[in-house]
Amino acid sequence: MSMPFYISPEQLMADRADYARKGIARGRAVIVATCTEGIVFATENHSQALHKISEIYDRIGFAAVGKYNEFEALRVAGIRYADLRGYSYDRSDVTARALAHAYAQTLGTAFTTESKPMEVEVVVAELGHDASRDEIYHLSYDGSVAQEHGCVVIGGDQDTIDAVFRSSWEPTMSLADTLTAITQALSQPPQKDAEHTMVTPAPTYEAALLDRSRPRRTFRRLTVTDFVPSTQGTRS
Image 1: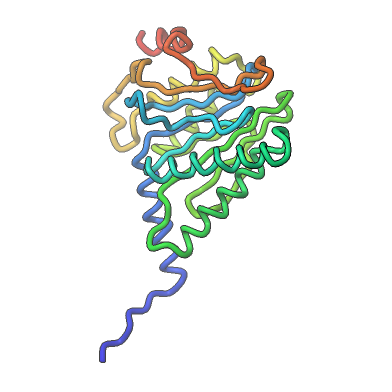
Image 2 (image 1 turned 90 degrees about the horizontal axis):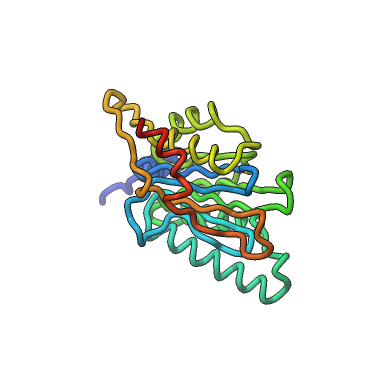
């Protein structure tokens, strides 16, 4: 009779976390940051159809990195959750904090009970009626939740991009200046290939803004023209 294979719970969780982190690191980074006009989301995305940044509800935006089919399922579930809650109670009762808690339950359950963890990291941001009430929540593959203040970077070469972006970003910057800082940070070559400088052209960016000037549905996608001042800088 063969002996059953044993692995300690600590090793099992460590292996799952390592597996998820490697999958997430293969995705291109997403930056979410506040600016005077609202909350901006941006990433490099060569696809015109597969979005990594989306609207969840009136004042709530969503961004994710990792396996597309997994974070797309989370996005759809979030929209259904928000629609049901807004229909049952009031549109003002739909909050990013409640949505983050729901995502945390799903991610945490998958991490501990499923055959493999979800290879995703998610950001849920809610635009406040003034800048002091903006909320940004960062959810990891294991269901842990962190409330970020001002900006967050997920996926890709996260540490390098975060350091470059924070060196030039301030929460009181305009949208144009924030996009300049974002494109400069996202154009950083990976650490393992730092000797090759690669500039990403503007049309490959996907970006959106939770626009504080809009009264109800605040989400709007940004176009190439929004990046014009910043791309002129990166091409010089």
